[in-house]
Image (cartoon, rainbow, N blue to C red; front, side):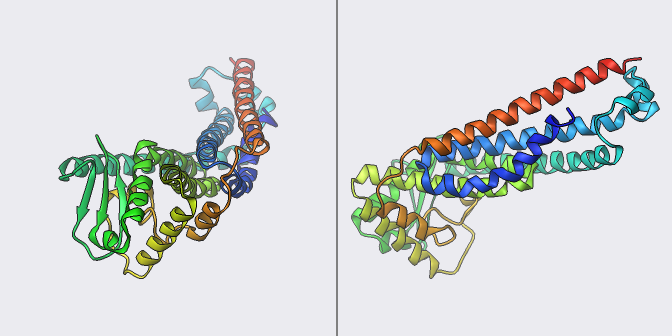
Length: 310
């Protein structure tokens, strides 16, 4: 435990370095899965590590050790962590649990509101057109979800571009992209060091939807043109609240200048990305090391508790 318990914490420092390469060199769907799982696993593992360290500190206090029928004297001798480290870990653990719970509550409320809003929207084939001169478009998850497009956006785009826009938005709904965003942000809430991974997921779901639109239309250049055109139109419109649909995806809109649009356009103008087995394998190795070290640390704590049992 003296080493294993710190490995997830160390890997959470290094993992964000791989967020950009994964998002820009790997096929978007695979990148989204790898980034989301990484954020969730590392966020969980670091929280568990903090909990294990905090428990070793509690064993040092006779009053608390008595409750578990442990020997505080033996615990002080065999404890793998300094008391100061255990106390800091306890404080960080409390903050991590609080932030994760707060994020889950807010996401649950937002998703519930989105489902209710989607149910109340009159629709034709899942499409809702709102009278608004501001060019905007977004997806609202529900049972089923809705694609909301403003008249301003429809007037901005021609018929082919509208088809691309709808293919992009429907990809968000069919692939449940809001779930990937929520899970990645949950990991980042528990461990703020993982925020670059959550940010990368917000980008890769857009790339995923872009690629779906390119597959549906068979014209990557036209999709790139539509992405740039819609983003430019939205960029010159005063920002306004667009409802719970945007809160679900954590952005103003799927094709707005709030995201790294030039990178998306450049990716569409280039050949499709492959799976990049080296990056994928490196990510799997990091996740495996995280899981194994966390399990080993938990096992070591179990042995420690048995050793100090009164």
